[in-house]
Image 1 (spheres, rainbow, N blue to C red):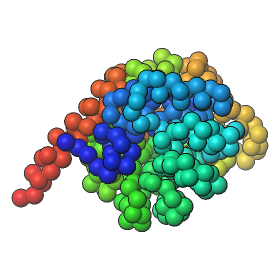
Image 2 (cartoon, rainbow, N blue to C red):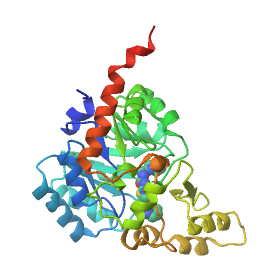
Image 3 (cartoon, rainbow, N blue to C red):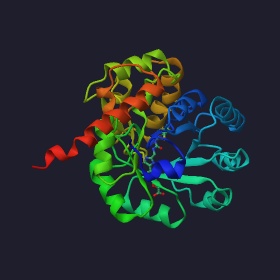
Image 4 (cartoon, helix red, strand yellow):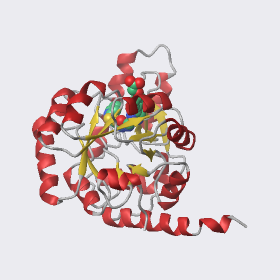
Length: 315
Ligand code: TUI
């Protein structure tokens, strides 16, 4: 049976976290993943306090297993949401795209397990120092807001640098990825893109179809010039953005206007012309819509089979 210290820490059956995807990861998806034995995570981004509170309460009615809330630290209203997770007794908080230091005291006092995303060794070290329970080392293969270093290079370096458990993210879509990350020293994985096509994931049908049709070279990163690099599926809009950001005569406001609200338009409307379809590089591996339970179970059983046969490499 596949278990790791992340299972004991987060009180989950399998060392699989579902990415707290902005505008996407709601109570329906999070509760399905938690029920399946992973850690389901609700995204606070794309909600307001009232909505977040009701999503948290909804998860609690759908499962009695642990779950988490992801706070995207650049998002508006994050300070109030940081208080809300304490009020609502959320067991695990993951953070992304910034530094959660100013919230740590309150979260730790409330007994919340804080698991920040780090895209570098220095940041992972800092997170350990301020009391994080574990750290998610997310490589640039991930969808959405990304760092520069790849998962293959980042994970072992973070594992060498910290003593808290490391959860690998970015570019993991099946049991091979999970087994490989355990070999790199991680104690678990976080997957986002694979859960985009979960039956319980409520994104627009067009978004799911695009993921199912994607190839290995279907994504690109735009927004490096703005300091907010985002990996999305290639589209006419994403390509136009990419061309414009290399054109010095285009001002920053024009660029941000092009991308504004693009994720929401992808998630809710599946808009071909205005949608920004965030996805990781493993989109090309995903071939079918499945229940969250089947996703979790098949990733775990594939990893178990591979790990059982590990000594076949030794002659
Ligand atoms: O946060 C993510 N991925 C996201 S957030 C998001 S929402 C969005 N919507 C529209 C425009 C922009 C964003 C979509 N995808 N992943 C976690 C993550 N965190 N990846 C990288 C980082 C990160 C990067 C730098 C964490 C910390 C950091 O350094 C902070 C510091 O202060 O040095």
